[in-house]
Length: 174
Length: 174
Image (cartoon, rainbow over all chains, first blue to last red; front, side, top):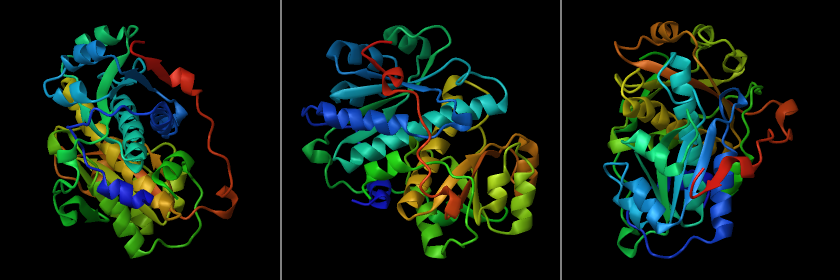
């Protein structure tokens, strides 16, 4: 699988097999997240890895569409350092979540290359998620990502359609 | 190059050869951005591709550290649809820039797999960037990405060090 194949073929998956993710694979996924670039090399992103069933359930309860983290063998909560995810100047806004998105995509692409599927889940109850994870003051949960081998029913499902490329791309000006 | 190799080996590059990027390669890079997942499948990210020297210079003038977009054969401005990049509820904040980061990383990983290097640049003067690109009301420029084959001096430079993985990763709780 080339990098392009992985990027194009990866689809968000919400239904997972019970198969555990081996530690070596998990460590490569985390390493992929660590190696994402960040604005000004600030490295504002951190990962909290959940495999404990009760802890996953507590975190999943902080989102409105979090059935998939419940069934996933591994959930990685994406945490932003203080002042990287709060309301503020435009640069502050773009920097933290943008870097989180970069790290998440690195992890999901690396995982996909090893046959591990994934899907993000928003944390609608941000304070609840902070408490479940025991985050220090000012840290926020940007998102959580469910990782697991896809359930049999999920394999072979086509990639979700996207708007046509012509709607995405403009040349020189809007 | 496996997806993992690309994700781990990719480094942000600010010095580019004059070599043009072929249209077929550029289209694959844009396609990679299009195929990134997005929260609720809203697809809020758009791309404005700049190859005109004067237009690149005008956009580069909207950032404080934008020498590299000036020297890059292709610059892609990452645009967010209205309400996806503005100050608001936490979900609004995380959704747009987070999805932009996912799309950008997809593009940069696919590019790296074809030997094309890249580096994001922040747009500090957001209103100026909007005017240069002629964006409709409410659209914002999240970032711009310089793409090009690396200058000879850039090849072989090691990946920038990162904080150790142990500082990135927590288990079950912070």
